Length: 182
Image (cartoon, rainbow, N blue to C red):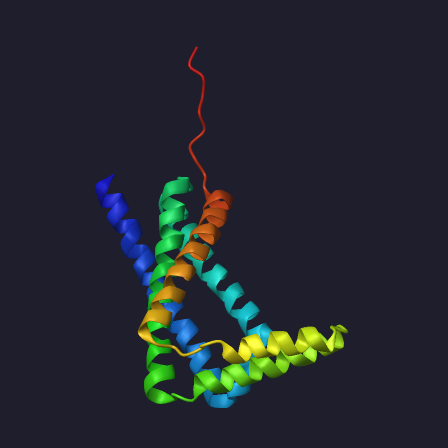
């Protein structure tokens, strides 16, 4: 059983490395092509779909390897370690990108986010007073990517990942059938 747990974690770490590298490649490609892409809602949705896919694949391959059976616990651990590993790599990359490669990127994204928010609020007919307050609050927000902020974002991602991992583990778990011996 101990060997199986170790094998599960090694399997998950491999997939976490893949997930982290895929996310970094996507983010870097978007950055190089056009920084404006980094502020698009569909980038977040697309990476979420990719992340979920790259969690499902290791769980299903491990379940096949285990003869079609996997406990909730094992499925959860695999999913969580995949996401935790991928998010850790992404966090390190974000630190390097925002602090060493392009220190002005935080302000760029902040301004684009404010602009997008203002446009959306106007489209939905929000009162000008509410728009001004929201934009003022956003303007005063610190969006720098210092180590403390990146660490905080990582911890939040771990909590979100725990929920996502639980859902995927519940969907893909398959326990042996219990039979009555009477």
